[in-house]
Length: 303
Image (cartoon, rainbow, N blue to C red; front, side, top):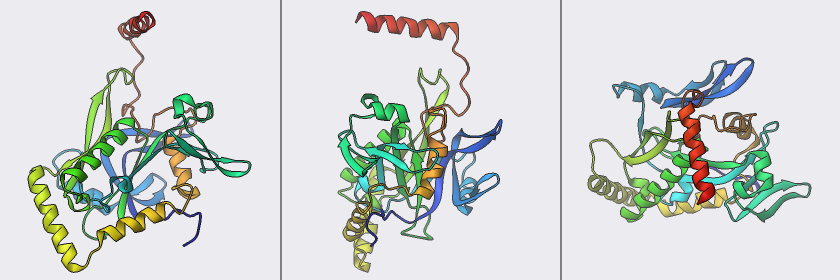
């Protein structure tokens, strides 16, 4: 195994809730209100669609807002990795990755280990637009049982919700997370920061038409069949954990360039295809919005 190279789950496709479009000579991220499954190949019009994208759309009457999935690993933190991350837009290289306590940062002497006060308390992070960045690997379909689709996001709502759900489902199933039949769901909500426009984030639940008790029963049956066939889930988790730990940063330079373009736009904003922003450009705040924010500021100042 090459030292310094993170060994990550094999990826056969991507899951996104938006795309990159060209406007006024600039390539900019644009939000959507549904899932899209793509391959890892880009054409002139963006990422090429994966065959499963059309198959899943035929199975629904409306927009693709749920995807049946399974996880590769029982350990929730292997399926979803999330850190505070900063990328160099010009090179696509990860510059600094931290967990709120410690970070790995590229400096003149190589990769250094430093304290990580989170983006709000870090001058280096604020200047470089550091933000939470998560990667979720899921299995879709039965064609490649160890291949995965990856969903990348800088959404606080998606990262927080997915992390909670993963740990909860693993707990209630008795550690059989990899055997549970689940689905990714797209949910919408409004906030003052979105000027009351809907923003979309990714959630996790049991598949439509099933209950949690039924899902757990199916997980136990699948686990029994796998054990009888010699499938070693514990060894798979160990192999994945060892692979992730083999490198300082998970994303390669090739992946980093696409990540920087999609999630770290030049203006430093959060208008990306996996962040907490509305799918369309928000309208200018009305006089009522301005007065409400001003009143809220006065209340905070006098509190």
